[in-house]
Structures are given as structure tokens and as C-alpha cells.
Length: 146
Image 1 (cartoon, rainbow, N blue to C red):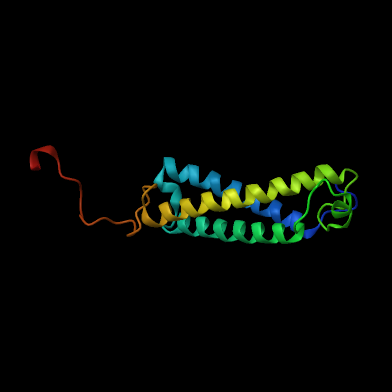
Image 2: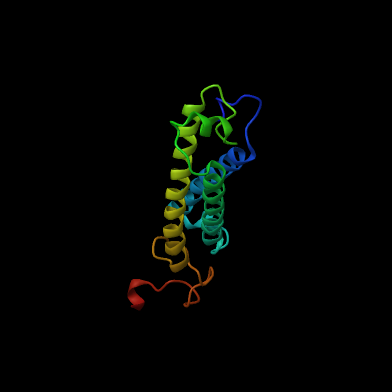
């Protein structure tokens, strides 16, 4: 959608791009944490990032759907008068792309809700929600002590 723009993009397109980039950066962090707990920083950081992604994708899904309204991309009047689709030489392609973006926003919202649930319950990660220290204090027992 950005490459087809004439004279700039609507603010909703820019917000959708922000959400996508934030999500990609969060995923890079999540992959690092999944392989090494030392990258986690604070134990609640993965939960907070998943929560932010849920919020951002929810807002983007609602806002993009509201800006697109209900219409068919085959209707030339809809394409020419819609705020999102009208700023391009190829309104039909931009309309289809905007509808696809809306679908992917809602799909990613659902995935991040599941990820948030797993992060919060500790089901999919090895992040210790109780803090960095365990119950046992001191060095680990050796085999002769067991």
C-alpha cells in the first residue's frame, strides 16, 4: 500500500506499519528469550510485550476496519471515495491490500492473545515468574550428598 501512494499515506497505514515493526522487534526478543533465559531481563517483560502487542493489534484491527468501512473493491465509487483506498493510481489493488492487511491484523491479534495467555501462565516459556532466585539457597548438591 505504501509503494502505491500518491502524495503520502493516511495515518492508519502508518500506524499499521508501526504495529508490524513493533511486532517483528518483539518476536526477535522472544526468540532470544526462548533460547536463553538470560536475555529476559525482568521476568515480566515477555508478558508485558505480549500485552502491548495484543493492545496494538486490537486497536489497529478496529481502526483499519473502521476506515475501510463496508464495501466491495469491485465498486469504483467505493474505491474512489474511501479514505484509505483513494490515494493510489491503482485503487483496486490498494483496496485488496487494505482488506488483506485488516485480515492479518485480526489473525495476529488472535495469535498474540494465545501467546499472552501462555506467557502469563508460564506454559510456553521457561521464564520464572517468581523472580530470579529459587527456593533452595546455596550451591547445588553433589551426587554424594543425595
